Length: 149
Image 1: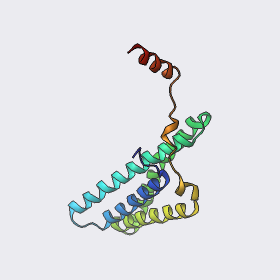
Image 2: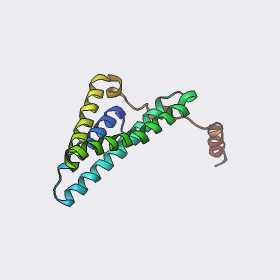
Image 3: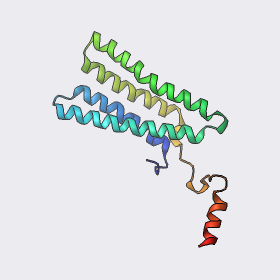
Image 4: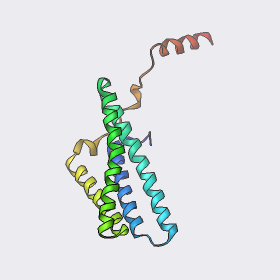
């Protein structure tokens, strides 16, 4: 994932795959298919979280990185809990399957709305690897090691 340059596209795509996998899980009849949907949803969620975290780390100025990362973490922890609450409410009125399908498809629609209205996120590219930061003294240490050999 770290080599994928189109971070915004990867983030949005992974989130859509997650929503679709959850909707398919709600419709899955055989156990093997349900478990497969959960595997796909988990993998897509991991890609989404890693990509979002990397994007936040790369684009947040140093002076604000700790605060922004903390807020991003709180949202990442609280968001699923709110989704679970919504899912429980809907399932108590309808069924667990309907709640899963509705939640997954609602997520896909919300992601599509974000993608449609947020051109900078859609177009986001990971910065070039040519400008890698080095630790202070690393250049001198590598030069000294090169001269010693």
